[in-house]
Length: 203
Image (cartoon, helix red, strand yellow):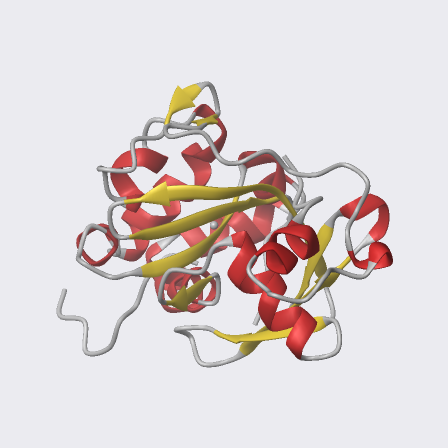
């Protein structure tokens, strides 16, 4: 498959995003901007789905190890995006876990995974990907600079909005007004960064 534009996969709570952003700022953080439970620094090789994620491996290679990302890996294979996601990038991926896909109607998933659904599947997957390598602190800094909401333009072309949610969480709002919570942040890859999410985003 010839890809004419970067088409790619669309990546623990983010309880300390605002606090992390403040650490990169010379100004003292406002007390209300820092959630009570600070997120610990990411491990050199964090665990996702019971498997160690090596920062020297690519997005697809790491995802294939994780027991909670099997549906996503299957979708990437079906859409023909494996080669792209094993490329240099860098890409930031908001990765829906298996439970996120399970929230969709079974018929919807079946249709997307069928040959006739490839175009729609590719559109959805690339909506989960933002060019560049964005850490939790980077996203928090953008949100802080923009009045509390970071607007990220995806490879698919439409935008995602990331803002603080309840109990120190961070929530992504998609183009249809649906929301997804980031459950694990800063899973470093050789060609980007993955943040695991609990709901599939829809363009």
